[in-house]
Length: 56
Image 1 (spheres, rainbow, N blue to C red):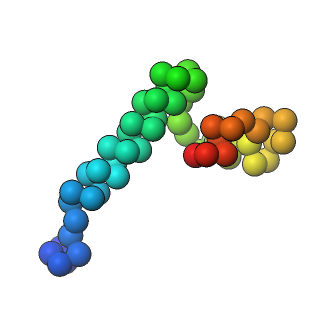
Image 2 (cartoon, helix red, strand yellow):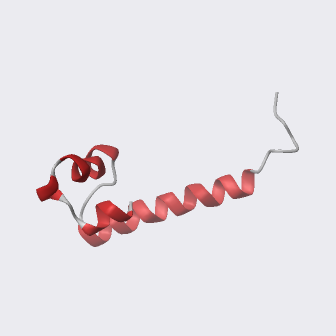
């Protein structure tokens, strides 16, 4: 059952749009696909640290 008091479809939609825009600009700007494995690689392999991975 949906808790209608806590149901916030507008903020959920805007959050999804923000994530989608970030993925789009990462793909267009750096020719990379946003994914957990590529981002987490920076934390386990120090020579792979990039600025964009830190921000994500």
